[in-house]
Length: 385
Image (tube, rainbow, N blue to C red; front, side, top):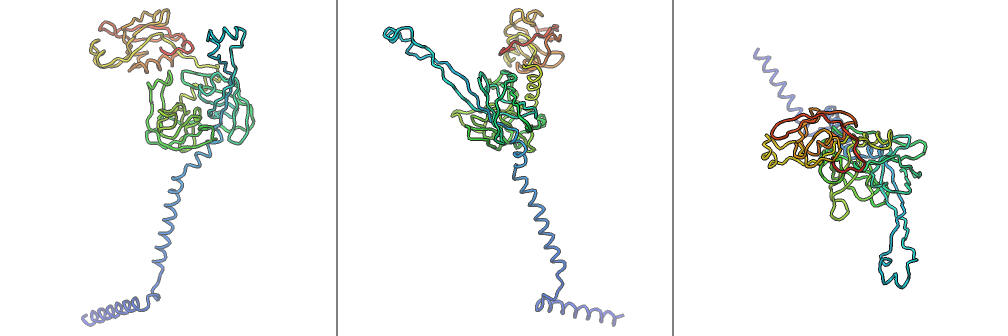
């Protein structure tokens, strides 16, 4: 047994010594299979890792998908101006009263729009096409066409126009309910008339309200550069789907300061479908002048929390007046849906159909009170509920 162990030990020692000498003097004699395989594996892993990194750094696919559906809009209208000297009595004394007093000029403006249908329907901002005598649309592929106004909704600042061309692209709508702060977005439009431009940013905030821009507000805020001429253009997600219509910027200079606002796609679709169907948007109307319930008002009215909408005034012969709603009432719920503030009241009432009867829960003289109300049709250009 000792003899066998001695032979094994000597053989092992000689083998290790030989391996050491070969490694030191002739390393090329050693097999390279493992080393080569490891090198190939590392290179392949490097290629695999770099491919997604390159793709993630570019949003060209999203831009290429959406850009054909974004159009440039040019409008023109005649503006009549009266020269101030014609109101000067000394001037009129020498030159008489028979002078032409009005000077007609042609004013033009520009904006953007989004093709939402292969039938040629385009969504843009109301202020882009408002009072325009002529609307010209330029497509990304170089074609141009005269557009016809289908309808407008000044209270959301949206409008629908239509062109008659073949083989038109149309953008797909995104689900804006899934939008989160920090999501990457792209803004496409025609800033300053330089031509179609794409800028990138993130979603800075959602559900922005009470900005005083529109009557009905529910904006997506973004820091993607939006400048004059971008109005009516597309705010898209990284898949190239329409997330919103760019509408306004916050600026002290007229240029982008990284605070832009877009109307979310869900609101755009709702208004667009109503305009295409009826030519306008029909909303419910209550006929009250509301204000938010502050902490001080809640204390004075002995409310448990600062919630609801205080009725500051009632329009005569309005649905609220006919139902017996009084100034000083606080609206708590509409058909069991809570009213948190004036914005919630406005949106809840606007979403109801005219002639629909609802239950209005009020707080009056320290007690809850339920009043049935028949909703009316919201008057055109009515700014308050």
